[in-house]
Amino acid sequence: MNDFMNINDINMKKEVKIVFMGTPDFAVPILEVLIEHYNVRAVVTQPDKPVGRNGKMSETPIKKIAQEHTILVLQPPKLREEWENIIALHPTLIITCAYGQLLPRELLVYPTYGCINVHASLLPKLRGGAPIHHAIIDGHKKTGITIMHMNPKMDQGDMIAQTEIPIEDNDTASSLHDKLKILGRDLLLEVLPSIIDGTAPRIKQEESEATYAFNITREDEKIDFSQTKKQVYNKIRGLNSWPGAYTRLDGKVIKVWECYMTDNSYPNLIDGQITQIYPDGIGVKVSNGEVVFTFIQPEGKTKMKAIDFVNGFQNKESLKGKIFEA
Image (cartoon, rainbow, N blue to C red; front, side, top):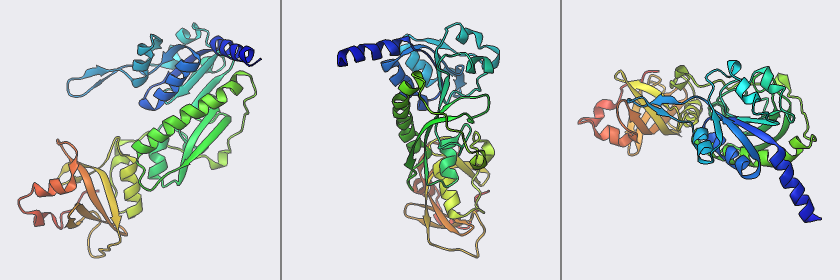
């Protein structure tokens, strides 16, 4: 009996024709597990982009995985105008994760088993393209993964399942990203059978509790020293390892990758002013105290310990009293 059930299960998985839509590294574990257990007919990902000073074209992480498994790759610049090629594959299930474009209605209504999204937040909190960054920047104590049915609106479809994890005080966007991508893979694999057999729940989102996590802008990356030390600390770790929080010193951009908070108070200094040079970094006055920059990246240079930057000055004492621009 068990052998018979296993054979039926295998046949069911092969009959499901999946088109997977995703772009960054976050979506890679999901694609890999789908390839292992299901029938992935094609992958849809964002177009290749030029990177670096030489403008060399870079393929998305999802495209690379698909090519390794000789899976068809589609890269429409504007999905709303080029969805016919996906319909032509006759998918019975579309799964998206961090794809980067909204799906047109024609795709949303086509697959037999629907369109499913894997989102890196506890919806309805943090709808949008940068939920991992904002979970830390906004000071959330927990986050997680939501598997949801898709509709035409951004991250507003009915939920199928959620799982959560705490946000540790030392988490960065990078460390949280790595935890959540595995969480997303495991939760999707768990709920897929119910999606296919039609028993997956539809849990309405509570609109009154909705918040948004829009894509990070250059303005978002700027450190505001009039904020509290906790807010500054959260911004720096919430933008590590991409794109990085920044400030300016003597007109030159300095990215700040790591810092810590102290109990020191400097009521007579200006927000952003260097308080003192520590053995491990640069103290900076903020609205309610001090943060110490420990790992930075001066303009045109690689990442370095803040104290190594300090040691590059003949007169280290000259740094005291300088002001980082907000």
